[in-house]
Image (cartoon, rainbow, N blue to C red; front, side, top):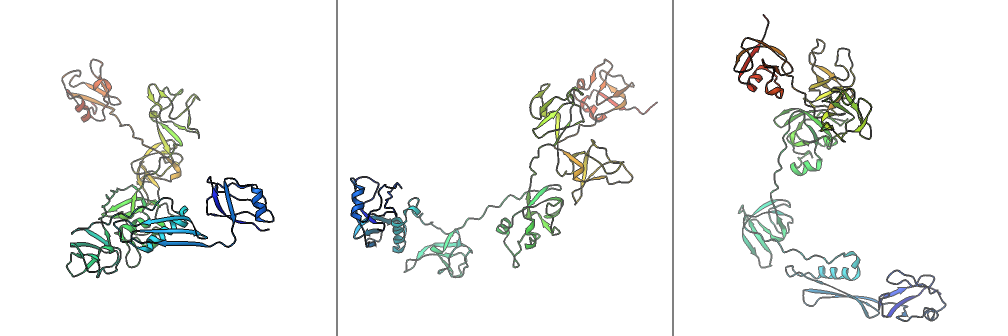
Length: 479
């Protein structure tokens, strides 16, 4: 006996739906609306199967040849009805109502009513009503989106409307253009247009790290020329696509033209560049691999100034006596622990930054552990540092693997160390007497440290006069 097709004829609950056709599986079991499978088994006849099921709240009849019908009607140019029948019995209904501001279209209503009737699972929610059409006025800018009867314009053209809306004998609404050339545009062929806001152009300087913009971003802003290149100031050719998203460093700026170097790309990079091809790029902060101590605290036990301390993978630092603590943990003598260090990070250095030398190539170079300023960066990414030498008058050159960058390091000023003669004094000093500035301070005749009790160290004699205007000194050059 084959499996059965059944129509539900009675239902007191919602396990089955009256009028709906169900089908047993090959074993005679019926699946309800909740996906639960019954326990009845297949019998020789439908009557035997029906008796075994012992239905109480539900009833079924066997279906052999089923006739399905769908009726879609509309009688008021507003509401479209869809009705589903099975063997003449209505089993489902749906409708679609036209929005008052829309023109009625039976085909649109019929399709929507049918979808709601037959495919409700694809309509997660009721279709939203169409928005009211935009109301235009003279002076509005619009974009041509269709060309059914908008003479003289191509799709995508931007047009300024002239005059009020008019309607012809066919009910088509249109506006005249501003050129008064006799051209007009249909209301259905246009959409509102708003001038795009001009982006603030980024300002660049020599040494900036930049990233090449995406092809899509530049094409959207500048468009393409007749050979398919982006219309930047220097022209971004199709052969430059591999540069998009890569990095470079600005070595020279001439108006909007750029000379770039230190590329991350390993392929072709010999092109003309301009500022509109690139965008500012900030290197992500890197975890320090070492810490450089800029202020000591009980050297030999805690921290020694000028010493580099290693940071392990857990962020722990070993002090001079072997004590281990984390880099950002405790205060030291009331001062945050991090203020005793600057991070040493592995990245390309920029002009003006200071670097920590790891190793050197020549005996007359800086020695490992020296910290030196960067005065120049080559197009290959090598750095140059200052040092008086006949062999290297332009400075010593280092590869990126030979140094670490002191991230955020600012060197202490060189304070005045000089023997001086007092040439004018109101208090504390004797005119004609020799004194000596040591590390930016001097001791007066009464034993006080000047200026300001040693709190304001000086770097030059002019600085000394500004800080202590009562007294004036000149350099002592010998007897």
